[in-house]
Amino acid sequence: MRSCVAGGNSAKELELGEEVFDQVTSFVKILVVIPLYFAVGLGGITATLAAACQGTPANCYHPDQMPPGIATLKLSFATAAESDAPELAALHTAVAEDLTNRFRPGFWSSSRSERGILANMRKPKFSRTLIARSNRHIVATLRLHTMKPWAIDTTYFTAAQQPLYLTGMAVHPNLQRKGLGRLLLKEAKAIARAWPADAIRLDAYDSAAGAGAFYAKCGFREVARVIYKKAPLIYFELILSH
Ligand SMILES: CC(C)(COP(=O)(O)OP(=O)(O)OC[C@H]1O[C@@H](n2cnc3c(N)ncnc32)[C@H](O)[C@@H]1OP(=O)(O)O)[C@@H](O)C(=O)NCCC(=O)NCCS
Image (cartoon, rainbow, N blue to C red; front, side, top):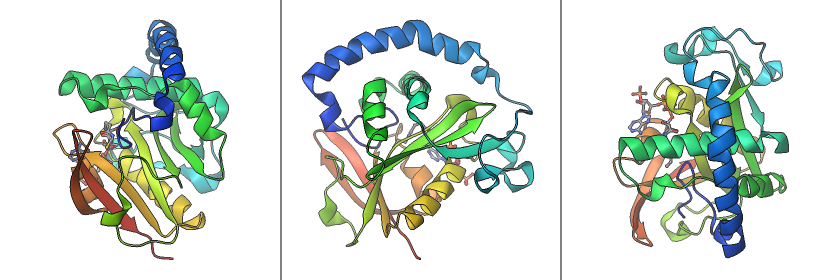
């Protein structure tokens, strides 16, 4: 599975044993977690969310700092904890289903397993999952990690001492195109600088369902277009200044 996709699993996650486990957990998710996710009201977030900011003042945004589209949301940013894994899996599933409905079934249709999400959280030195919360719900996420995804060929990128790879970027379908993704990337850049890292690398599907234009608008530079296991990909990088 490609690394960029909202529901993208690493190759390790696709081991046979986990596939069986995933089928069972996906079934449970479909029956329980996703309906719960929507039932608690995330699907209806449009107006003022009065809940207190969950994070510290440093990672809380207030309306006057926000893009107009999401200025009414009180957002906080944090590193995900293990207790966030079920909601993160549900968010990835919702995003994958939305992409599939809007485009067609494709590489972007896979979801992420809760087990894989948890496994990544247990390696904080090498991987951090960033989340944005509003009204206590996770509304956006991405992951920064040191290990190169299988789909990335580093020879195309500018040489870097400590590159980070960005995968699993997802904004809840109801909140896309309102500036939230850009804000989350801004957080990711700050975290990457402090890591410390000198570059962020990623791939996006080179198709209508892909988010290449989003990354380009957020300052990433396209470095190559490749085909990896039949998937057309665009590689992007952001060189970090310190
Ligand atoms: C791609 C995604 C993360 C972007 O987040 P977002 O909150 O919707 O994006 P923003 O509102 O911050 O957009 C910032 C800019 O990028 C543009 N943009 C966002 N998504 C875009 C897309 N899919 N195609 C083209 N442009 C896009 C916006 O119009 C905006 O442009 P502007 O500055 O000219 O107004 C989000 O839409 C998403 O989760 N999509 C589905 C999953 C996915 O594609 N993940 C990435 C896998 S490679």
